[in-house]
Length: 557
Ligand code: ADP
Image 1 (cartoon, rainbow, N blue to C red):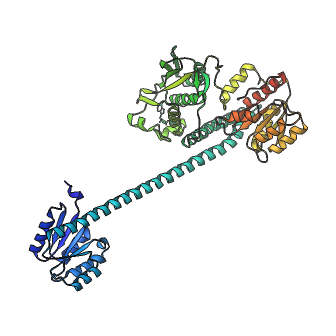
Image 2: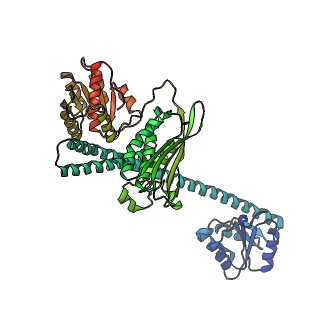
Image 3: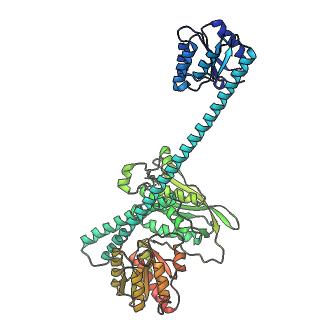
């Protein structure tokens, strides 16, 4: 049985009710909807809003006859192609010709032969159905094509947005490098207390700005699918201890306790991306600290299960802070979402930390979730499946490309390399770098330590310098005009005195794989920009010392 919606409509137009009825009776068992009207005018009215499969039109009618009605039917766009079958009692050829010239498709003599009428009408009904079907399919295809075009346009716009964000934040990081570096240098001079205070504020504000830029860069890289996870061995306890040290001071400053609980069952030597794991925990811990005024914050790691090769580790960062309502818990993981815009002014942040953390955790195969109650505090948790590091691999603390200045300073304080006195050996350093601000930064950093430094503004100049002088260390920017850092390194390595000089790449991208590319090009390692001057000096001096002792300097800085 066909539903009413699927039935085709047949229009019968005849001024004589009995004749209409006779036709209706014949067509009834076609199972379609029959509309019967008594005049041409009424037929035209119905045709305004309804779609018919076929029209059976009496020729002889008062007022508008069949021919005039057909003429008007054809003039309307909606019915210009609806098949018309004339019904007439006169078997006259001139009638037939006039009808065809007005657009009739057929002619039936009355009284009708039921079988003939039914067969002809059912052919038109079938034709109508097929046309409708083709039209529907065409509509669907057009809709799909529109949808596809809209999706492609949206993807293109999104890609353009991400590229724009990545480029802008990358470009902004270069001057930030100079601002932070120069401020660091200035802070190591003797200063009036007030000037020191101003510069300290400049230093901490620029650090915040740099962190924001890094977050934007990270998010755009992730959205553009341009980031890859490392798979290196690391010690989980050492990583957490590092974080605890950094956050311990800040928590104490706020009068908060910091609790660390790593269950004994959690294996220590794991394989994964320690930098990204640290970034995730950093984001969650800095939020916990920001949004908690009394009580405690906690780091927790426990084992869900372990096999011979892998461990399912559960992480949780908890606090006793302001908490988050159920409604807000739904939206805080989307970029730029913040519960309370005024908190941005108080605490800083632009609502990207959780979006980045949850994207990173997802990329590592986990899911970030939150349990929280306003007023009581929050607990952010996730589980990661991490492979166990093979016993033979050396496991150490993750070396962060852009390790924080505090940590670097702590390291220097430990080995005393940066005491006020200069280093034991004066070095001759070559810097190949095209950005003026970076040149100044490195020059000052080296001269402060009593080293001498030559500066080349592009790769070709660097090769020339290395041809005529001998250096203890070469610092090589990767992106430069004329010859880039890789080409310049290859040329220097081919020089008689260039085979053994330590060359350290300075790269602004800090992308996974950079280290391998630098090593493959003949460099000894790389440092990610923005440069931390303290770390830079330490690296240069270590490298020179190791080269003098005959061992190569470390490959990742
Ligand atoms: P940001 O902290 O930079 O604003 P996040 O994406 O890290 O961005 O966090 C988004 C929002 O989620 C924060 O602005 C804050 O409103 C809420 N939030 C995150 N962590 C906590 C927490 N531990 N306690 C209370 N609110 C939080």
